[in-house]
Amino acid sequence: MHSRPPGLPTLGSTPNVDRLDRPLRDLRISVTDRCNFRCVYCMPREVFGPGFEFLPRDELLTFEEIRRLAGLFVELGVEKIRLTGGEPLLRRELETLVSLLASLPSLQDLTMTTNASLLTSERARSLKEAGLQRVTVSLDALDDATFRRMSDVGIPVTRVLEGLDAAVEAGLTPVKVNMVVKRGENENQILPMADHFRGTGKILRFIEFMDVGTSNGWKMDDVVPAREILDRLNRRWPLEPVDSQYPGEVASRYRYRDGGGEVGIISSVTRPFCATCTRARLTADGELYTCLFGARGHDLRGPVRQGTSDAELKDLIRGLWSRRTDRYSELRSEATAHLPRVEMSRIGG
Image (cartoon, rainbow, N blue to C red; front, side, top):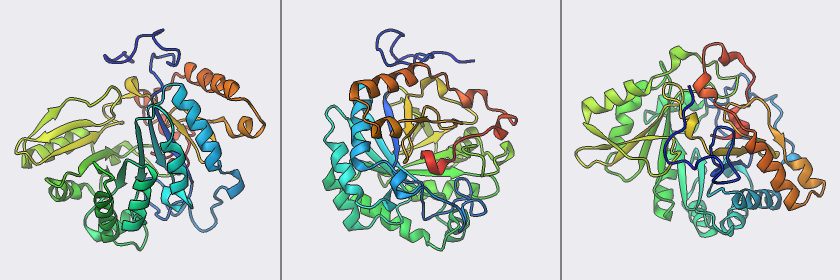
């Protein structure tokens, strides 16, 4: 059952809440549907192989179009923007977009999610200088064989670890590290990953394997529940819960009692947080999705290229958000796993 959490505005206190009283606060922008990894839970090679057709360049939103739409979202209440993909570092001259977005008035947080395999020291510095504030790095194992099996590419795990270090050196901090945990694939990496990142200032977050898209063969049996992850960690290093930093934070936070830092657990499957979801998602070709598990997007590229005014675009976005009722994770079942959903590579994380 959906219940309204504390800390969110009451209905009517802002014009930009949806039908479940959730405000618009976060925008995820996918800048490309391409990726140099073929992770088993996101872009399995048997689906996204050599014959797969990615978006033509002329169908991608230009940086100026992204800046225009992002500016309207900020005017409607968005405070945080995250660049995603695919792999966002595959988009040429990404620093130009970062600079455009960093100039938005009242934007509080500009971040990026990346697999970090292309994040050299020079690239990290240029992104920081352009105005990027932080990065979140996807890393599912420290063991090289496990990492290569899950990412399904010939890139060694050391390349990602070097990218992590480059982010820290450039000041793209605090760096967060996201580990998707899939039963039978990498649950034996939970403790090694925690041990590696304890005391480093990098914040490790474990993510339950989710049924994003329809190509990853999701089954409930493949999910390692948040409770099990927490128990494994707590037996090795006692933990205590930490309060959320802001309303709508997706990760449950815990800190090591011995002062080794903190970890997070994102439990969309076993502990849904739909009630506090404040995120909209814009695909690389300009479709707006109001849920990570959405089946259908709403075209914004068309109106932008047809000369629609800013006022009309804002009304369109406001209207789409005000009609939002999404709460897929609260309704999830084995049956819903077969419903059509947008692929992760199009919508980002």
